[in-house]
Length: 249
Length: 322
Ligand SMILES: Cc1cc2nc3c(=O)[nH]c(=O)nc-3n(C[C@H](O)[C@H](O)[C@H](O)COP(=O)(O)OP(=O)(O)OC[C@H]3O[C@@H](n4cnc5c(N)ncnc54)[C@H](O)[C@@H]3O)c2cc1C
Ligand SMILES: Nc1ncnc2c1ncn2[C@@H]1O[C@H](COP(=O)(O)O)[C@@H](O)[C@H]1O
Image 1 (spheres, chains in turn green, yellow):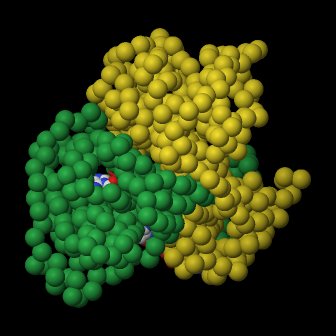
Image 2: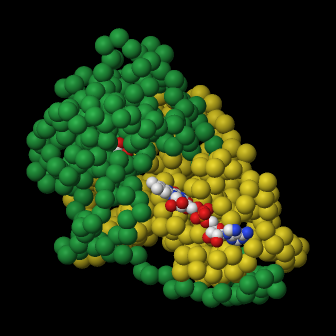
Image 3: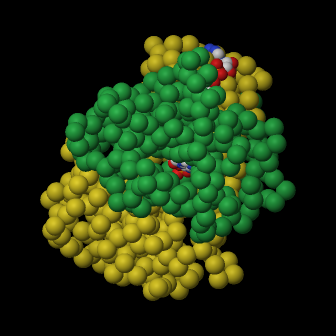
């Protein structure tokens, strides 16, 4: 079985965002980048799926980005992914552009099971998996917290508001991973050493963007409010303010 | 491309969801501004409260109906929607930014050759073009953007666009029984969570963090949520500790929420937590440490032991509710 996992390289979640001079992107000086947190679950599931299918199964990781993604890709390799591919577009791409790049590569590799994170924590779109699935004509189940693949049958649980749906589908399939799907492993020392020697395959890609960013802003700063008190005697006043001033209860 | 807007409504278990009224109200508002036509579509089997729509909408609503649509099916829904959009040539399609909307919008976008963007919190029509706003980096920044394609598809965040009531007598409803569904991917069962309300849909959220000291004290959070009709939220620290389920986690790797009122109890206000809830309309913080960062964004704060404050707060609210 050929299995792919798509990994996005994102700013550490502890990053304080500063807007770059173009006013359309973030200033990434001093920002450290990490594997997108949800993609960690996708990587783990790809590795587990390979172990389950066994034989000559193989895992590929795919990243659309520039050379600065390589450090993150090394971490993916260290976890045990067999081959890493870095697709370098001629300019930063929107979600559809990324999905086009990924789908072309997945098609030429012939992967029938493709894992994504449910969302990348930079643009927070949550759509690249579904777009890629559609471009490939694959089935797709999103926000998955439990997964079973038997032959070509897929049974998954996906998280929705207030519950979980049990979903049935078939291969070929795209799965987007939610926290809870598994417990991601740590890289072993052996894995880290092996990853250093591995080759990252580089590809070029060109596409046009449909989404045009006009401006990036910081949200309006929230004014600190007031401290009402430091013991239970403050409670009636809090309730009064919520009722009469904020009018929310 | 026809000058038409389509509002995609959502039902679950045969009940129209509140966010549907928000989608429909935005669609209507934009249709007035752009002088476009507007209509709505809903997919499902029996839907018990469809008539409520007439208080918000007088234009056409099409209900695609089949007994196999008691549950959601991404493949069936995608096909029905894409066919309808292509046949009627809508130029703007609005979904709710829900599990269903996020699942469907990108698929429909590919099938209808549209540009797509999720989680919009503002849409304005300025200088003959639509400008959208969405939060990025979990709300640490916002982008304003255009979609440079003839057809545009967006999802809108719940609780942001206010539903607007109208005077209207009748619902302009057309029910279409459909056959030959594409059920390659279909839901075969549904497990309801124990919690009553989901944080992503709640108007009020009562959240607890490590300052609650242990899972055994979360009954206080639950009781306060109960008397307020609120959802229970949690910080990642308590989710990781196994005190609370992940579905309750608020923040950058949990849920991003914008309720009217957010009450944070024993939560320090780490940047990842703030990212997920700082757009709440009113924030209350109860924390022992007066220097906790949560106070920088709280409207009202009490610097005290949450375990002492909560029982009193529950009693006070019970008093005004009775
Ligand atoms: C990749 C990544 C993603 C993350 N994503 C998220 C996320 O989505 N959501 C999230 O919440 N966090 C997230 N975090 C974790 C975040 O950095 C914090 O560790 C976490 O939010 C802290 O939770 P807390 O406020 O409950 O605990 P703490 O930071 O330990 O704070 C406890 C607070 O309780 C107060 N306190 C103690 N006792 C009492 C008492 N008796 N009464 C009142 N107050 C009391 C203390 O003064 C303190 O301020 C993420 C971290 C990483 C690295
Ligand atoms: N540049 C990228 N390269 C590879 N995979 C990506 C990229 N961007 C997003 N993805 C994948 O798509 C998922 C959803 O991303 P998004 O739609 O941007 O929220 C992520 O969790 C990744 O698995």
